[in-house]
Every structure is written in C-alpha cells, then in structure tokens.
Image 1: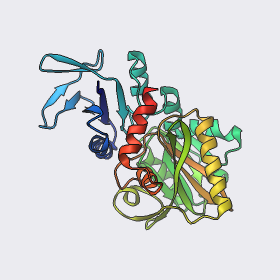
Image 2 (image 1 turned 30 degrees about the vertical axis):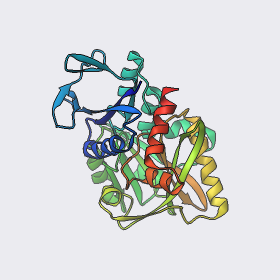
Image 3 (image 1 turned 135 degrees about the horizontal axis):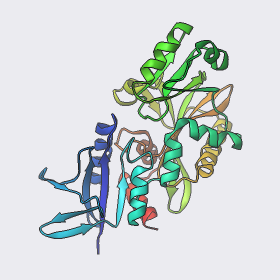
Image 4 (image 1 turned 90 degrees about the vertical axis):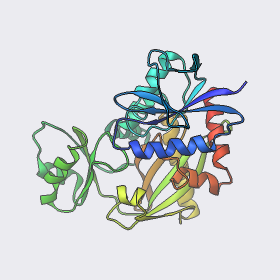
Length: 324
C-alpha cells in the first residue's frame, strides 16, 4: 500500500516563497507510483492541503489530518521543506513528535539550536570547530560600538540571529556603519550576532544520510558578484556556484571532515548545508542550514546530481530514512 506523504511548505517568515519553490520541486520528483503526495501549505492564518485544482482543504491541527470526500487522510511521514519558522526552528518538529508522525529534517532540539546562530557556534566551539570572533547584542541593550569593533575588528558582519536567506545580514565597513547596521538587523530579529570578517574562499558543503551512511554530497565554491553572499547572490543570479569547489586535495579533505564532524556533534539527521570560509588556509564554520533550498538551482541538489544521484533518488531516500 502506498504511503501518504505530506510535503510541508510555506511558513511564517520572509522565506515563504523560497519554501514554496522547494516544496513544489519535491512534489514533482518524489515517485507518485510509490507515494500518495499532498502539498500542505503553512500560513499564519491557516494550514491547508493545496490540491492540483488549487482547491484548499483545511488541515485539522488537532491530529494533522485532512478530509477528502468524507475520508480522513492520515500521513505516514512529512517531507519538511519549510525554511524559517515553524519548520526550521523546531516548532513543527515538536508538534509532529507529539503526534508520532515522522518527518525528514532533524529533531526539534537540533532545529532550535541550529536556527539560533549564537547557540549553534557555542555548541561547536568546544569541539575545536573554528568560527569567526563574535559579539552578541539584544534589543534594549546599551550598545557599545567601540567595544564591538575592539572585539571583532572591521569590516564585520552584523546578522539577525534567527533568520535565513541572508535576511537581516549587513556588512559594516567602517566604524560609522556599525550602529546603522545593528538597527537594520533589528528589523528582522531582536537578537543580533556580530562577527569578524573572514577573508577567503567561501564554500558550501551538502551533508545528509544516504543509504544509511552520513554522506558529503559535494563541496561548492561560492563566488559572489556582490560584497558577500547576500539574497541577490543566492536567488537572483548574482553569484557563480562552482561544483566541485577549486580546492587542494588537503583542503577538500579538511572541510569534508569538519562538515561531518559538525553534523555528528549536532546529532543531525536529514539534509544540511554547512557553510565555511577558508581563512588563512583553514576552514571556519559560518552557519548550518537544516532545511536547505531544494530547487534544481539550489546548492545541495546540484551537488547530488553532480555525484550521480537524481532528485527522485535523493528525495525518495530522504523518505526512506525518515520512515526508519
């Protein structure tokens, strides 16, 4: 009997349209002869099953079911493609755990930790995983721009602590830029992380469990046309993504080992895209995305295809691993 799979997409953040694209790609490529597929759209006002004729059927949040011609459809698993809240910060994972419905991304605790940039690096640093120097600020704090610059130097990055797709990320080049950058980042989150600038090759490493084994899908070099890998560079073609990255054999081995170490330290499952910058020849952890983009143009799918894994195989494996 075919399994009922809910493809969760949408969400409550600025990443909503990106998630819709990811969810639709998963819907197109998961084998429909093996699964009954349902596009479940999450919006703040309602959750609904979006049928192929664009009819919306409201989800019963008490048990995560939908009704179709008086039949109640229960889901065997959820393919989680929501970027941002509630699918990448642990809220959806915790809800589904309570209902005993498996889902493809990491657990609720891992999601909450990794979505919080400050918490994530605090977990990784004791395991000798290099990061940039950092400084934390909350809305309402007395902000000492001089202390910030003395800690992280200039230029520096001011980032919304709990956001993705480079929303709320500003590069401050000079002292006068710091306070305006913080105010801009506060428009996205009331917690800020300020990091030292790491000069070097930026790369992104796709990691996941494939056929039961923790696997590096590939290493992609990011060459941005802009000042850094911002929203335009990520989604509007203002960057070149080179797979495999132009690294030496030693650099390649170093970053593969570090990516797998971070994945294991964080007790991950499901897909992850882990970003690093080579600074002084050594990879430094930047951030981890636990629900990375899954369109054909997204980095992790590109890496999988380059490795000889089709999107159908990649997504089907994710469901198989989830159902274990």
